[in-house]
Image (cartoon, rainbow, N blue to C red; front, side):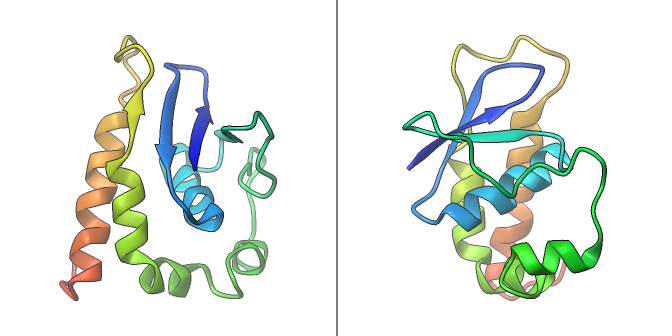
Length: 116
């Protein structure tokens, strides 16, 4: 499924067959400040942390352990980050695409068992 990243900069998208993976990627890309909308126009609940969050609530949203979720789904997460695209190219100084490439590389290494 394709998801729109709701942010104050450029219109952009990621894709994943796993909604939790898309939420995880969106959380990292926007440090909890970006919304996420699915291709049917529905807001994805549980991905916006505008006013911060606790480790406990992150764990609850990601199968009981946020860090473990990242490790267990590293290959899917890397693949999701690699789908990042701008709707009309980048026009903002905010380079979300560069962050997506950085995270894709980091999670790809994690999936291969390479420590970063």
